[in-house]
Length: 271
Image (cartoon, rainbow, N blue to C red; front, side):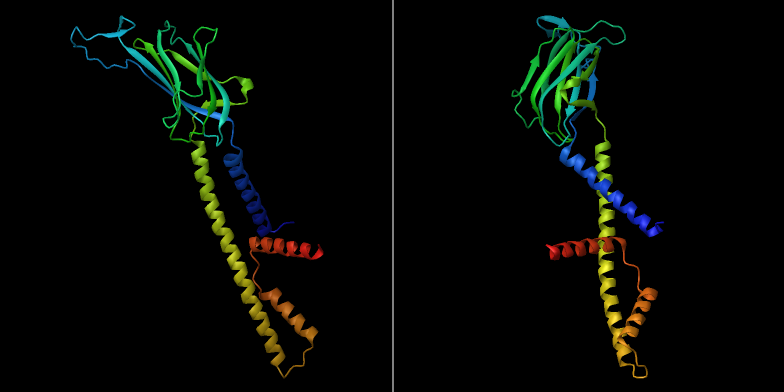
């Protein structure tokens, strides 16, 4: 049956393994998932009720009362560039109302990238379905994004659903803050574990040195004791009993690390 210290050590091993595995998953392999935030602004032009009669908004030579804008901010926080990505936007009526006329649509890269390279609209046969193909979706982090913008005639926007083909090997989900929170948690836990491991190694190294000196001094004292005629075997038994009674427990991490180094040294000697 495992002691409480051995159980604690196993928990530390498992936790450290999960921590390292989490870092590898997030930072090395990443996930082929895009994230998005959506939002809209209806009645884009906030025109007061009392305006001059000659103030007119026009689109293609005909008067319109206003425009409404629907935006998608698309993030690639997968820690790798994603190639050949098609993103679909399905426009549908809101509350059973008729669809407003679409004035403009486009998908634009982050400002640091060229605007006209590697992004093409693909015409779809289905009505009210729009698609854009991106040669490469670069990593964006959390502070930059690709912008999909739809501008409609009128005071209200319709509903728009964003998606990626299921057979593309890439997914798109609503933006979540879990990644930032998870990284913060990993960093904090990593710092605590690092402090624990370093403290354990220093404590084990110091205890080993201190105890080695104490044992040596005990042997010297026994050798100098003239009133007793102790054999080498008897001195060894006294030292062993003294260690068993008074020697502090070796910290778990130091014990594991020193055991690993001892094993490596023994393997080198065999080779």
